[in-house]
Length: 166
Ligand SMILES: [Zn+2]
Image 1: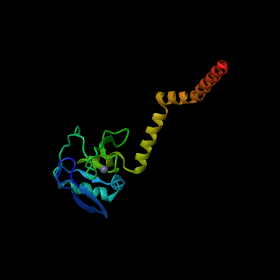
Image 2: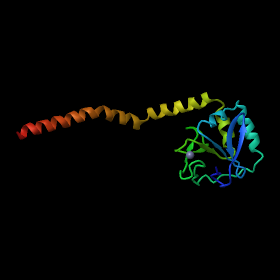
Image 3: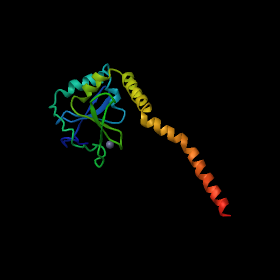
Image 4: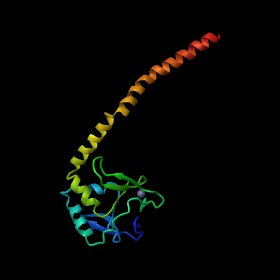
């Protein structure tokens, strides 16, 4: 696999029996699907070790306007999204394989924001609740309740037209 930023070969390292791939060129890290959750809590030793290890490499300030391609699926452009609803840390996620690319210092940032998975879950829950309470969703629900009536009305109308035609 190649680094999506510098296109150099990623270096595989094993931390606490988990293999991850890092870029010695820019200090970014590639996590396969579900791997990041073994590193993102502040008490998780693997994350602490990884952050320490990353300090050995030059940390390139990322050009966040550049769209990155997935190291595993070279034809797939990754989606840039916020790691959480409230916080400004953006990550690159592959819609194909679910892998995540973190630029230098993003892992440390995520861990500082969400000391535990529960904090992250709580934030996601609040985000969903906020959306569900929004005017747009309420209006949509209102409409979807009216829909059966509308269909009834149309079928009544068609039925009466048919009868009228006979
Ligand atoms: Zn991928």
